[in-house]
Amino acid sequence: MIASIVWNVNATIVEDIPFLRWYGICWALGSIVGFYILKIIYQKERQDLKQLDSLATYLLLGGIVGARLGHILFYDLGYYLENPIEILPIKLEPHFQFVGLTGLASHGGVIVALMALILHCKKYNKSFLYLLDRLTIDGAVLGGFIRIGNLFNSEIIGLPTEVPWAFVFVHVDLQPRHPTQLYEAIFYFTVAAALFKLWKVNIQKGENGLLAGLGLTVIFTQRFLVEFLKENQVALKLIFQ
Image 1 (tube, rainbow, N blue to C red):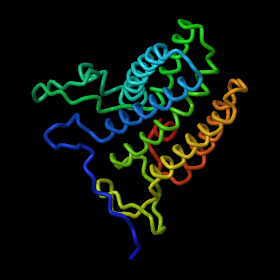
Image 2 (image 1 turned 180 degrees about the vertical axis):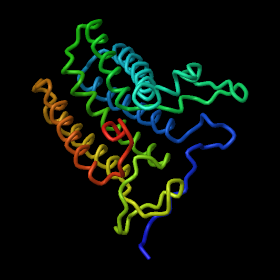
Image 3 (image 1 turned 90 degrees about the horizontal axis):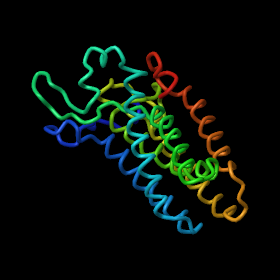
């Protein structure tokens, strides 16, 4: 028998509260950790912390709205056209329920967050690349937490394997599989630590675009390679998950 880790975690933290999910908690934790990392950077560089509060608001709203719209447009457009009220975090059938934002797509969040970043840069006359460098560190941290959330949801699973650290996702099937969510989470956190170290080394050199270029290159390279270990997703999920 193949050694494996049985993963039978319920995505909902409290069964009677459907909107309280591990995935949402991971998003929140990633956002909080990212904010405090950026605060350390702002303090070290003697930037205006009031602008940081504004930036965080822009990115949080842009990220949530974009992630929600991304899920609707890329994955379930037909359903939401038939049930438009459920674009909001509620259901009316069989009775009124507050269910939370049960569908979020990280790539949609990134797109709208970048648009919000452009607006922030114009308002405060900041360099887009300067902020993008520092936010790439935060983005890697958030990406790691999101993948942990995917693990709790038993989604974005890997191909069947016989490696000793394989996971059996009971909510999917009983096959031992690569825990690709963990592979990506560990990679994201490693990239974040490396970029933060590189920022400290180059803090006085002002090479705007270096961290963002390096970070995005290695992240997308990893995303391409890990696809070969993932179970095929359907439709656009094959591209974006």
